[in-house]
Each structure stands twice: as C-alpha cells, then as structure tokens.
Image (cartoon, rainbow, N blue to C red; front, side, top):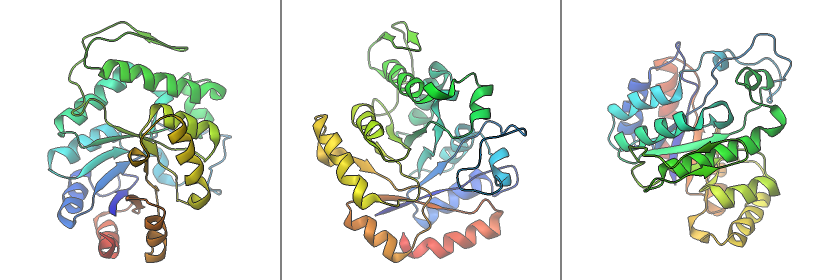
Length: 275
C-alpha cells in the first residue's frame, strides 16, 4: 500500500521544499495539498467538523506554487491537490496550470477535485452555490478538451472553448483525477463518467460505499481494475490500514499537522512504520 501525506502548508509551517525532500527520502508516496483562496471573516457557513475554524484555513499556500517547489527538489514523489476547488477557477487557466505542473514533473501530478463547503468563499468567486457541482463537472470536461491531443472545441452548459492550440499537454494525456465528496449515487455516477476515482475524507463507511461505486463504475463500462479509491486525511493505525487493504485500497493519504519542522518531522517518524 502506498502511503501519501496531506498537510495545510501555510506561511507558518514547514516549507514545501523541506517537506518534499523529507517525504521522498523517507519513502512516502506523495504530497497532497488543500486549497482555500481566502476565508471571509463575516462567515455564516459552519465549519463541517464543528467548532471554530482552525487558523490554518485562512493561511494556506497556493497549492500549485507550493507543489511546483516540491517538484523541483524531488524525482519520484507524487504531487497532488487535495482538493482543488474547481468551481472557483477559470477552467482555461486551471487547465494550463495542471498541464504545466504535470509536464514539468514528468507525469507525477494528481488532480484532486472538490466542490467546497464555504458559501461565502464561493460567493466572492461569483459561484452560485446551488449549481457549483454542475459547474465544476462542466469545467472538468472543458479542461479535458484543452488537454486533448488535437485542437478540440467544447460547448457546455456554463462555458465553452474554441478548438485551440493548448500546450504543454499533461505527460500522459491527462492527469489522474480523483474527486472528493460524500458517498451517493449522483457523485458515483459522475466519477464513473469523468474521473479516475474517489477521494473520500477519513475513509469511514467504505465497506458499504465501495460496492455501490464499483457497480456505478462497471455500469458505465469502465474496467474494474482501473477504479482508484484513495482515503484522504486519514489518522492511521495498523488496524485501519489493514481494513483498507482488505477493501482493495492501494493508496492512503495520511494527515500531517500544520506545524513547524520539529512537529511535522516527528509525525513522519511516527508514520514511518507504515511506509
């Protein structure tokens, strides 16, 4: 099983360069970075985990800039977003960022996508809350058109692009794309249609959810072996990882604290037996 990591990298934490070098040296499979452009102070949307919103949410580094630094000082480490708030991006710009990072890193990038929880943050980006999921899927389809080997037009519900020269291309045609979100038939049908797998936070309830996703996947004509399920932001234990392995999970993303070098490297030492 591959053990990757995620962390809220901020202006107060360990740097991307130091962390990436340590992860590769210790044999971890990857680094997934979350995204928040800003957190409006006057916010009525509750924090999904309950209680006060942790300080790091309003201080996150831009994941693409941080991952570019990580790519420059490593050779094997996987690079990923966990997650990119796709509805809050211009899809043409995002397609270029993704393709460039994947190209320069030799195909090491995974695009983790999600649709967000913070209504005020999304509103400042001009995103209508009730349509953010459909908007996000539409933008992903548009990005795939820009990654196509030949100029390919796209006409969607929310956006369109002319047939265009758009280079560089991702190293393998398109990056691995994983989508976060709560288990459900609508999400699973969309994943089966447009993505490579699911990025469930924490990994609870996978025993019940995975068979439902596998059926949606196979009903869409996808190869069963191609489906990737990557539990995300996991606090690992031997029993938990063994359970995931029994479910056919091949990669797990473990949660690192949003701390300085001593705290983060100490946690890596704790997680080293799982690598």
